[in-house]
Amino acid sequence: KETEQVTLDTGFVNTASCVSSITYIDGDQGILRYRGYPIEQLAERSSFLETSYLLIHGELPTSQQLAEFTDRIQHHTLLHEELRRFFDGFPRDAHPMAVLSSAVSALSTFYQDSLNPFDDEQVEISTIRLMAKVPTIASYAYKKAIGQPMLYPDNSLGYVENFLRMTFGVPATPYEIDPVVVKVLDMLLLLHADHEQNCSTSTVRLVGSSQANLFASVSAGVNALFGPLHGGANQAVLEMLQHIQSDGGDVSAFVRKVKNKEDGVRLMGFGHRVYKNYDPRAALVKKAAQDVLGRMAKPDPLLDLAMELEEIALADDFFVSRKLYPNVDFYTGLIYKAMGFPTTMFTVLFALGRLPGWIAQWREMIKDPDTKIGRPRQVYIGYGQRDYAPIAGR
Ligand code: CMC
Image (cartoon, rainbow, N blue to C red):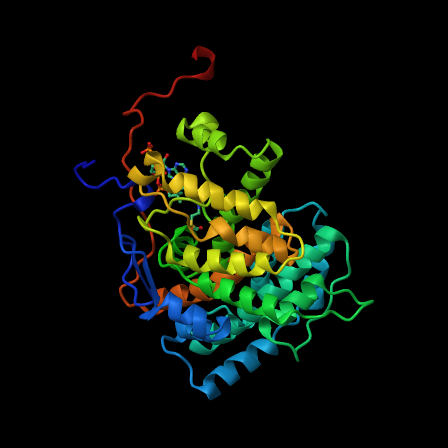
């Protein structure tokens, strides 16, 4: 809709907000590449930290660069003791995403030596601090919720191992790390690592465009990810599957409800603003779900339910005509559940994965000489001028 000065584009469906050389998506073909590398190749052959380096620095690292990057991250995993105390103040039943965003925001208060967005060294140390400390914060958010003691990080462990031990370990017993869980979780983080100008990344850029520091910008991204139409969808998918199951497992009846738009019910984990084809990440996640859940002594009936739901939806004209396919969130929750994560932690795992993308996009934005403060216009539809009426006469 055109007005004299501005074009209305609700939800920025057709508006590019920046130029970027980080992530390429072809939504019609179902193609996703980070810095030119197909997601399938990275998922099979790279690791989360190597891919994080690629996103942030633009090229795959040499072995020395990767070793240095990993080493620096490993040596910044500890939280300031005062920040650890923050967790005492949150209610036990707080959603861990709310705890995560608050604690990330608080990093600005502890690291005042690295807040200058135009100082490359400060940006680099903020990058390392975020990559290192967010997993620690995430696991403490979980420990707080279940009332277990928080474990200090163990810097002899790898990135994912350390996170798993801090999350599931207890001081009383040594934590046994399952290499299959480590491998799959590493791949899932990698699959979430960037996705160009999605809601949370656009938020990070918008906040950063005012020259706010990296911690402040990323905490805003965490909040944007919280919502069920974005990262919160992975939690919503599992809750939807559990709801269908407790309602007697009638998948067709649920699909009918979605099609009739009863109470605005949507098939969570389906549809995407950009993909009008199978989300390439969803294909990789589905395969991982089958592998991980196939190893379990007792199969999870929710996997069969999810596959039935997918099959019915993909054969139904409502979904076909709207080009609604499973997205990355459709199968991830089933894997996280099999790994032992409660549903409230699912979106936190998405945040851990998306972190290097937010950082890379913020850094690209701050270095771009054409960056302007993000300041969308509006189409005003309110009153024209009218005169103030004294309260007695209203
Ligand atoms: N279930 C049922 N109908 C849907 C769905 C769905 N999941 N998604 C879209 N539609 C329908 C919608 O009702 C509309 O139909 P109509 O033309 O009759 O009004 C049409 O498809 C277009 O939908 P839209 O809301 O205009 O599409 P959008 O591009 O604004 O929304 C979306 C994209 C991802 C928010 C949406 O597909 C959705 O709500 N999906 C469910 C939530 C979800 O899985 N989100 C995760 C997205 S992927 C990971 C991430 O980015 O975080």
